[in-house]
Length: 376
Image (cartoon, rainbow, N blue to C red):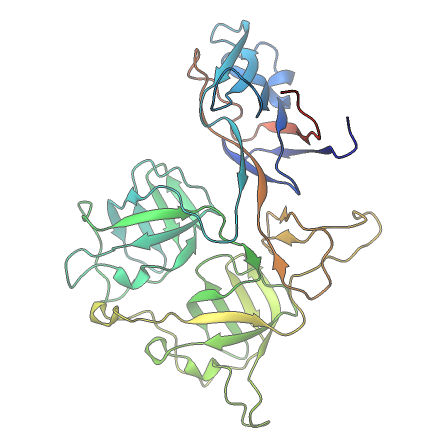
């Protein structure tokens, strides 16, 4: 039967051994072909194809089935019992991965954290909790801010956009008992979203750096909410001295990258922005924010010659865009970016533990299905 079945397919070059594929449905069957391994004859300990079926009756966790080469380059079948192919649904509220111990941190214009075997990638969003070295020292000023990781230094260290290079911050060391980090599994449920500001460069135009992907487009209208402790309060949206009672808004005139953009506000005479916030000020601390307003933002894509007939909005807006599950959005509308689809995990085969579905730089082709009928 096919009347209500749904099908999708695609391809990508893997950036790591895991990938998230967003779909407009939750599949019940997924096929993955590793073209790189298929094209390399008898590649030892490599997967050629992987299959997942949510109705497989042999196990309650629906293992992923594999075809590939053993360590001796012999064609074999195998399974990944956990962390193979699986489905996900983001829901309407934030979900978090497991809490991981923060071992240490390093101050700087950006801030580096040591977390043993973190498993994160550039583009993952994390939240820190309990960043105290003692009752009066550490980096608790960063607690509760969502940070999209900018750099993966190695398997145990990563970097976020935050200037901690001042006397208010103390490097963490020796795994403080309260210091943990959690991954935000689906951070962009609605886009564009409110963003925490981590740096402001004043001048004839104003450059804003945010803690997570800002998801703004050129032409986006924005407002600022900056408490006194952070400086640059002149950017705040009220009052407008030219038109009393009218908010002061800015317009995005360029997007530098996923964390940085420029607005058309002349801030040459404004107070400098600072992250030099004392630990004693942390209780009740309110973060500086930039928020989307007005009619022009990321909520639609122009249909042009060669484009999809009904293009879904794609995020983040600067680079490495991924389609949302939405159909076409009205130009200028906010987008409900609730995610669903399937995940290719980094689990290893049961009988040959060096086999994974894919590795970085592998070319992958996939197909996903949602059947309208399944045999009981």
